[in-house]
Image 1 (spheres, rainbow, N blue to C red):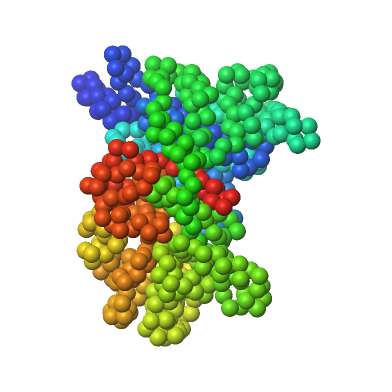
Image 2: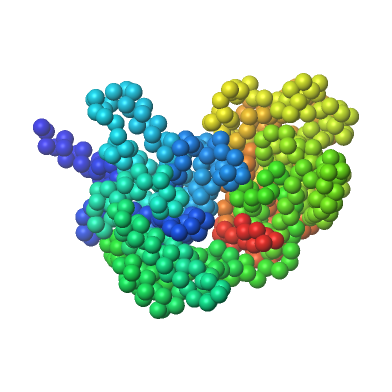
Length: 633
């Protein structure tokens, strides 16, 4: 073998940051040694809903603030291939990525906390793993072997993690330094067992000093005695150890900070150093969670486990700290009404809540969200449930802004149409997203053009005035992954429209989509002659992406989902416009400046999707949580 060729190959591999799957090859300054990818695994015990996703995101943010590049993986043990076909009541929001991946809502938390762009492969499900293995088996890749959970499924999980961990998600070249992995569910769940086994093997595979396990558990306080109880966490850790994994750090959820004697007891029974036991106690907003981790030296504990003392530095969280403190002090309210089908579960509209929060903080307002079930606005509700009907209309009429989000099926559609009509006729700021845009078009056709039977073919296949039709390339037989998904380009058509000004007078934008119905291009001329303006279209000019009512203070509908790309401190342009209009400050935003007590933006800063054309010096750069009438976002 030509050794010079081998040398060139090794040099190329070093330049690309690869030696073998799962490893980072980097030159350490002054040392010249290679180091492996570091992995942080976050698991949960005792009960679900403890906040593993927020914990994993906060850990990633903390490590990023220490100067490391971070990527994330979410493992969901369900058999579904992805979250795309799951009911919002079952699983909450389906978060959509740039590549069209329909994934768990925790990936939205990762993107917002870390300001990264993940891929569909950053969400691992049992369905994906089994499909991958079975496809290999059908092709004969296992050469006659009996295909089993161990080693074939467990090997596939480990190889998937190593492969995805190498994908850069922060816009820079080469892989990240640390991969934070969140295992969904609770320790002891049957469906999690293959992943637990795989991760146990994985900890040996990557070697000591490259794997850190953080176990999130519950330390309840019983009202009867007022004492913090450690037994649930003890049992959870014992179960984890019985499955072959030992926690390096405990993150204990409790209403108050853990007492020293409680930490000592946990340390004794769980074999975890007291310095590695962290309390995640209740806080006013989850901006404080990374600060709790920092104040309790979680980053130092992680660095110690991962053998990273040489890169240890104090996390830079000055802006984050300022933001957390200011958010607690906001008092001037802005009241937004969300008219939807799934208002019984706020996680269904999680990204919308986040986007509203980002925008309200940027405008220096305290967000209050009123949830209105769309069906409660309908005439039939007045007869069957008059109290709910009156309450729904009272909330709608008191709102300073209205959001009609996306959805599927005909339940509540008439109520959404009534909400759009109320906002249009009473000049209340309105933002319709996906179905909410289609609703605005249908309502306009009925009320203004006099097309009483105007409808979407989704709800009435035989309508004589089909304002909204099924996409030509869509599948009517298969549900999963058959919609128009992911990042698509929208070209602005009207230079004087509110939307183009909010986006910084750009000629086009890229936003994420998730729909299978769209405005009928054959009716566009009739609608525009009546007064609607389709200010954004796709590259063909046949797909309507943005619709506005020019003579309305703020009445905009969009076919895409702008909420998915909203970032803390870089609010989505359309949500910023909605909040500003609801506060009577839209002229200031459209005039390329925001006048408010929180953000002091120079007048030459242009507002655009996800923030500003140039970075203002003292804009609040992040936001992840707020209480909105008792509902966290």
